Image 1: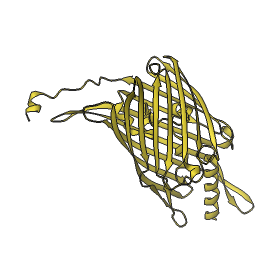
Image 2: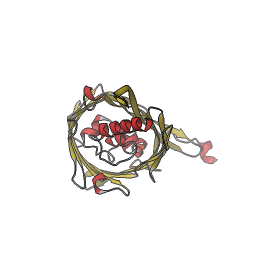
Image 3: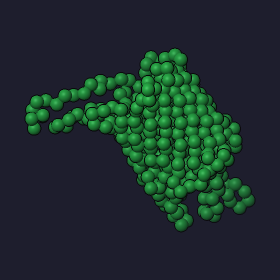
Image 4: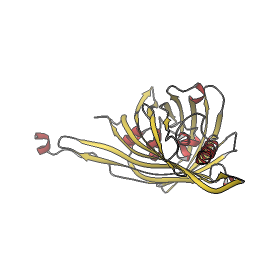
Length: 336
């Protein structure tokens, strides 16, 4: 009986996320959807942009170039009210100067929670469906980024990730980490950024407890490589990513392309596309961003999907500037 109930729950969980993620991605596949309406509207091509709280997920090295403190989040029902599925996140990032005995370093820190909840899943008993239950999946990230010494053009970062799932009596736990690099350079007068985020290095193991057999699931090792360029004083942003899932088939290697136009300080218009290299599935994305009072941003994304129809996502961020002037070590510190 418990095995049958667990099978029903796993099937429901898989079906609920397949519209947003490629098949066969293993544990926490919902997280590959990404986070935040801005990068999602740009097709998910964000590893070489890595701005704001989204950097925690797409490339933690972007935190090394942050100069603002921000908090943000999203709560959405991506497939509509009838499916009982919610996808949400909360995020906070900040950047701080660290004074040591011989130097000053800047470090960006971020904490993030991504969660998927599927409610009203029926158990199966003799005679038909039984009681309803809820399944949840969560990913927690603690991220940090620092610039290279003597330059703000390059930075490195890392995230520690904790995976938690709960289905009936079963629950899981997995711990993994990401490593990122972000750099800026110019070709002629055109500014470029290049980014790399190696996610779940070596594959993250997710251990189940309280279930028959207590299986081990795996989060695939995905290397995200991206390039972006800004034109017309960054009025136009063009960006692209390639997700390479190590040891996985071509249908799980994903290409992302995105475009953002910001003709006015108060508004951005975005579009994007993503699809696998086997050409078995793709999504078209679009969205807008509204910026108010230089501190509040509201972002909307539209994502096409074949199975459950289009998804609509809205995220909100509040940010403010902080004084990031470097602190010069004292003579006493230098003499030491």
